[in-house]
Image (cartoon, rainbow, N blue to C red):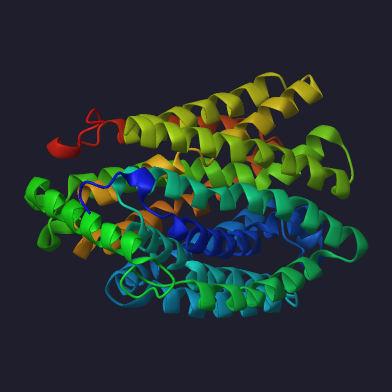
Length: 427
């Protein structure tokens, strides 16, 4: 199988593995981010909470999100990503529905924390699953296709949530979108297999090529891996901490932007919630093209670090210019929308780095650690913007802070050292 070109290998895994993964995270992202429309739709007035507490309610999700990251990654690597994600879907769907019935601030905070716990292991489990099905030369595009979920979810969530609120109220956003989560079970369980060896639908040719290629990849990685990246020393690894800090900074910017985007647009344009929903979807239409372009370039050049950094720089610049040109409403909106085009373009390249640095036995735990600790930035970002809005009655300083944190993340990404045999240039 070694001499068969990749282009001649059947591609059934692309259609069998990636679409269900996309659907799972579309709904997970929807149930995570619909609180931004609940806020704009009057939730804070109903519960009697201000901007700071609202930011905490949105961000506390990421405190709970940390808990199952490493266990989820480990379970997926050594047991079953398929079963772990099935249980997660059932848990977060139920929690989302219950959130629609809250009457007290503490109830909202507790349920948002619980939602974070329920969704926490899903990302590392899916990343493990992708690694089991796509070798390094395909992994950037595989991660990129999966990252379409962010754009599609945002395009769907914005108008859907705005529409639901327009004929009912914010409570039904949680209830309806929670029910949708349960429908995923009938797609996820029949379609997904944990590895090529277990799949009955894959051709012998594709299975043999995948098994051989992935074994060779791990063999090469073991020879090149520094001692600090090996199993017994993973948490002493400088690479692990650099990746984690980078991801933390990215998440501060991404979720600080995405949570408050409907509110920012509403304040900027002075339009109703239905129009705000449509305007909030525009950035994520462009994001689909951005993800595809950066994923293609990442795989073609193998310059993973470079194509994780460039979109974040453009994201930071777009946030800055959205404030600079705020006197002109639609110019400011264009830059605000442009920021959304870049927010997840880093994804395919960034998540191709851990498998290049860590052996398979520990890569699930490494992904869980990076995603769990890094995603605490998802708490800090919304909280920072909410705090600034409370004390300044303006979001401008908050946008500048997000831009600075993003650039700090780019610096930490740039100093990560890759093993010699897979250095960006062989690559």
